[in-house]
Amino acid sequence: MDPILNEINRKYVRINQYEKTYNSQVVHALLEKILKIMRDKNHLFKSMNPKIAYLGSYYDGLRVGHATEFDINIVLKLPINYKNIVLDASNKEAYTVVKMPSEFRRLCKIPITATNGFTETEFWCDKLHRLSVKKFRSWMQSVLDSALSTLPKTNDKYSIKVNDKIFLITAKLSGLANTISIYDNNSIIDVDLVPTFEFNLEQNKPRNCAVDFSMEIFKFKKQYFIVPKPTDDEYIWRLAFPYQEKAIMNNKNNFKSAVKLIKLLRDTQEFNKLASYYIKTLFIWEITRKPSKFWRKSLSFLVLYMMEILRDQLRKKEIQNYWSPRHNLLNTVKEETLENWCNRLTYIINDIKKNKEKNPSIIRQYFEKQTFKQERFHFESSPKTVSLPYRYI
Image: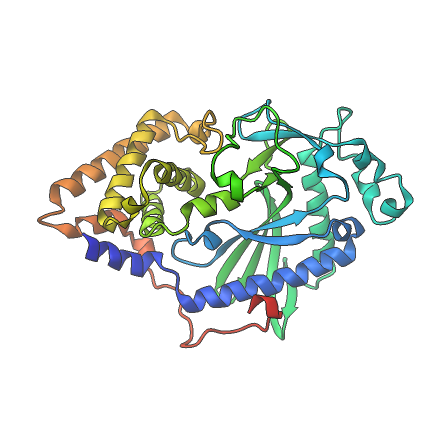
């Protein structure tokens, strides 16, 4: 089956190099311009020294098919001693309460910080000094909206010029991100801007946390994030460890190809609520259980093996959060949906195993779908370019 899987990978998984180059250039250039406008329009945003962290499936090398979705962390920095911020993870697995110290509360009153925009932070916390996800997200959205309002509009979209080329964009709040959609000819690029705060384990470690910070990975990757993911409790922030996850996945031979093929299978079978992060987590668990040489096995072996692992976890109705194992990532998916996925996957696995020797092409009917066979975006023989600041070249 390997030749067929390699063909499927080439046709439907691998990103066109021209598209990859062009779209990433567009995203980087537009983001730089938008962030500059945000800094100019909002003193507080500028004072928190926003920096871009390129994370998510595209930058992990796990994006399937097209470079049309990007996750960008906007890392903000408060001018206080982070050692004095109390992170208490006892309320909910994989989340933490963020209790701000008195020095944070003084920022809105001290003249030098008040004039730099920190009067806006006065009502970010409740009476227990807990930082509100809702109020912080609302502020971030207002900063973005204010910046975009300075741009001319074409119909219902904003128009922005980058190096003599006009792009149309829209923005909306979705999930934990501010999503900017970039319209370029017939394609749409979605950029999720996620505002975050970065912490270091040497400065601050969450209390009452299920994460095992004695793991080897934390000895050389100490940075982590708190992310304003909305829940039914506006005072808990999601803990995120993207740098550690990236390090765990690094240099694992056929690992990434197998992940992407399982994601393709998810798409063709319309397991729509099976988030990419759940699949990634499933694979990370297997990395910790298998020796490195395991990922040198053939792609067909790894894909079928991971299909069986996924089936087993769907049967159990559980994929444990790697960092907080008591947190079941599937707990928001209906049991009936999980059972349907499990039954469907069981049938596919049995059919492939039964027929793969005499008819290795059997795998096509499960990994290919008409919508995936449609003509891919066409690019010129050399990629279009957008002039960029030197650090992006």
